[in-house]
Image (cartoon, rainbow, N blue to C red; front, side):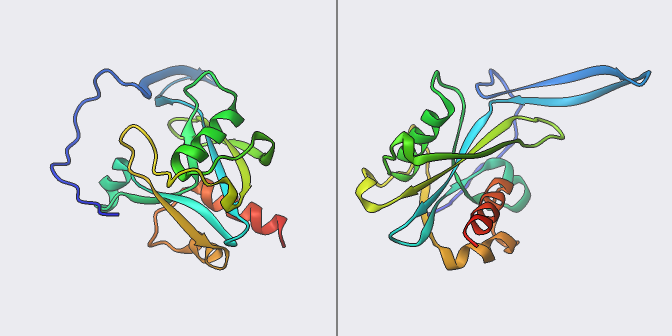
Length: 188
């Protein structure tokens, strides 16, 4: 996937759709304090294992905030999405698997692993992590996202997943690393 970025600049946030910024003020043990906060949607993420390929299905995409730090901006992540619809978390996970990765997975084949808070220093939104096992009979499209998303579907062989956890040349999310460690512990 080509990643040609031009005319990148930071501008003041106007009419935000997905986050809002705030200054929290409070007293803690008698001391007045303040803290900058980003209020963001909760999210779901799904570790997808392709049992016929013996591989994980991941997504590669451009993240502007990462671009600020490495002038590339590409990340390898779990299939994921924000919680911004009137659906259950597991229904959002199912929808994201189909939109991003191109597989229609029955709800009963999606298993909750756990949930945790992310970016606790400034946001603290909650992510719920799921696991789904797929095969080619579930493939309904090439994936790639919706509404202008540019998502590349990655088929990562199981034998390469452990090394990816510690590969500092690849930008990946803590959720991805946690999910891999969960999978390896469960399947040891």
